[in-house]
Length: 317
Image (cartoon, rainbow, N blue to C red; front, side, top):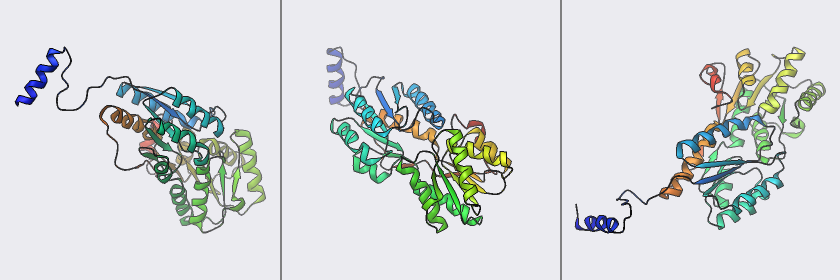
């Protein structure tokens, strides 16, 4: 043991202070982080992320608050970010639902010295422009394009993209990527279905009646997939379309097993909730930050691998 270290130990003991040693600075558990999403209360897909936040908070011994605009209003989301910033958390986790709407509040938080990690919506480029530490999510255009490539290989030429959250630019990127993979204009093949199950059912029904040459369906999550599945089953047309959905739910998993849904695009939302809490904790305690952004998707769940993931749908997948 060197003389310098002996002196450090002695000085700490003399002051009745704990000796930290050479591993790094002392810290106390209990950091507080706030996760602000764009999701309305009615969107059950976010239950997986909420579960991840709870588990990560318990594992890291930190508190994590989940906040969201009840109706999905993005102006309301911007106000929630401002309110969260005013409470001086140790870090913020933000979905970039609309860069132009959220840029001011997010950059104000960063200017105040609050570390920010972006997840789910938005792009790595937008995250970097905001000044966030890292982006964790799925490149939405690429995911849509991957779905379109599968659809094109299956012979799809005309499709409907059922968009249940059209106010979020990321949703349009999904539909556009699908159209580009097919090599056709998006145009009126994307419909604003709304989020009410009856509305989704009726709007998809009307579109398919008006466009009988449609042979591909893309839904953007359980909120649009589940009413569409019901429609196909009700009308006996389950096998007529190449049907791909974003995300997983028990109903989507059953649709895959039944051969109604060709595949589901899994962006692994559990990681989008768990990892930012871990990274912000390490940043608060040790000044650590990942060197690169993290893509949690896209991955495709099909009949071949549904057995590996269906038991965790709605909780971890």
